[in-house]
Image (spheres, rainbow, N blue to C red):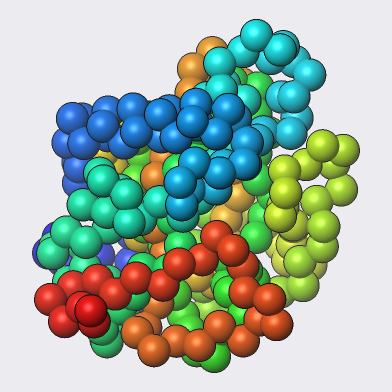
Length: 257
């Protein structure tokens, strides 16, 4: 993935840029099939090998007891060592671009497949860095649209330039049945938000301080995405109890065995 002058300018100005047509439809389909396999192996929640499967809490009642496992799942975490997900996380052009942005060797430390089934709620305004109590930053997220992301199915919204902000206070999501770990920022003007509408295969690259949210999926179809987070190699997690979904994996030519 060659970084154009416009990509670099957008990164510095807005805290994100979009790469159209980064991945093939075949690769996206393979990711969706593998995520469904893991969801079914965990029967909608729990573990499937190394993967950690979180249910979609607000759909627990509405989808019914006979729903397929993948219709009850919110996210599948810790999969960047697994088959098609590992292949994507380590592909040289992606790694080279992230290393260029961070100016250093990198690790992939977090991965999640997002199902976002019909009726699923969006995730409130947040900065990913809130979840990363590390000794250095920033981190970089890459968000692959596995299916199209539209206004109807709850695409991401971002606040351009908010990556220049510090990490704001995040309060617990106040909605009943909010998903595990959901928090929200309330002390910032979000009126400059802009939707990020994507086709399957498009890739969003974004700064860990960028404020973003997603809205509810009001369509009749899934809005699937695959997300990876990268950090400078040698980063130390300062949390007293590091998050179990994190798994530090060196990537790139100078991987550490």
